[in-house]
Amino acid sequence: MRCAAAIFAGLALFVAPLAAAQTADGDANVTGNVANHCVLGAPTPAAVNLGQISTTSGPRAGRLASIANQTVNLPNSFCNFGGTRVSVSSSAMVADDTSPVQAGFARAVNFTSTVTTWGSPNASATTAALADGASPSANGDGGVQATPNLSTLSLVLSSFAAPGDGFLVAGPYEGTVTITLGPE
Amino acid sequence: MLARLVGATVLACAAMAAPAAAQNVNGTVDITGSVGERCEFTVDNALIPLGELSIAGSGLTAGQLDTAAVNGEFATLTGWCNGTSATMTVEAFPIENVDFVAAPPTGFDRVVNYTATAVASTGSANDGSAAGGAGTPSTVGVFSSNITVTLSASSTPNSGKLIAGDYEGSVDVTLSPAI
Image (cartoon, rainbow over all chains, first blue to last red; front, side):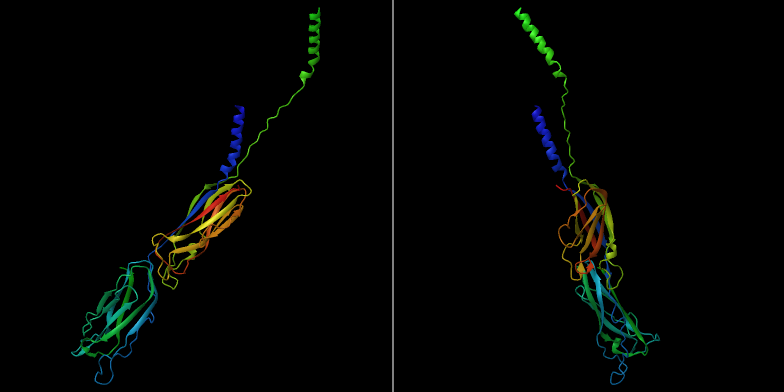
C-alpha cells in the first residue's frame, strides 16, 4: 500500500511541469470606421468663357454663333460607398440686361449639360428658357452607381441655341451648371 | 545445579549487551518540490478604438488612409512569466472592412496593414500584418509587467481610398514558457 502511494506521488511530480508549460494568449482588438464620403474633384477649367457668342457678319449677323461643345473635367471624383448618383442642375445663359425683350430678340441661350463616367444613363439636363429669360432652370439625374467609384467626371456643354433663334440682346450673359454627387 | 549455572550465564550476556543499545541512529526524510515554468496574462484583452480612418476634405488624398489615426495608438495588457527562457510572440492581423468584403474596385482599399509591437519590462516583439503568420519570438525571461501593444507603419495595399464601413483587426500576443 505504501509502495503504491509513492508511485502515484512520483507521477504527480512528473506531470505537473508539463501542464504548467502551456502558453498564454492576450488580444488587443483594433476597431475603426470610415464614414460615407463623396468628393467632387476641382473642375478644370473652373469657368467656361464663350467670348463673343453672336455672329458678327453674314446672314446670321446678330444671331447665336455656332458654339463648339465645351468640356469641363472633374478629376479624382469619388464616393467610397455604393448606391450613388450624379445629378446636374443647369441654368440657361441669360443677359444681364433685364429690359423688356422686343419681338424677334432673345436674351437667353439654352444648352444641354451632360455628365459622363458615373452611373448609366448619364446625368443630363437641357435648359428651355424663354426669349425673355424666364424659366431658365433644368435638372437631370444620372443612373445609380452600385459600387464605390473613383473617376474623372466629364461635363460636356452642347447644343447651344437661342429661343426662337432670335437676335441676341447685347450685354454679358451668364449661366451656371451645378453637379451634385451623392446618395441616390 | 546445572540449570542455575545456565541462567547465570544468560544474565551475564544481557549485562554485556546493554551498552550497545544506547547508540544514536539517524533517519533522513528528503523534501523535494518543483515550480513549473508558467506564463499567464492577468489582463488578456484590450481594445484600440481608432475612429475615423480616412482623410477628410476634398484634396487629392481625401478618402485615403489617415496614418495619424493608426500610428502610435496603443493598448495595455498585463502578464508574467516565471521561467528564464520564456518568450513573447506577436501576430498582427490586418484591419479589414467587415461591411464590404468583396474585392475593392479600382482606386479603393478595404484593408489597413500595420506593424504591432508588444513591449514588456524585459523585452519586446513585433509583427507586420501584411505578411501572414506570427513574428519572431523574443525572449522575455522572468517578468511581471504591463505589455504595451502599439501600432505603427500603417498603410493600405494600393494607397487607394478606403471603402466606407466598419473596420476590425487584432493583435495576438503569446507568452510561451520554455518546455
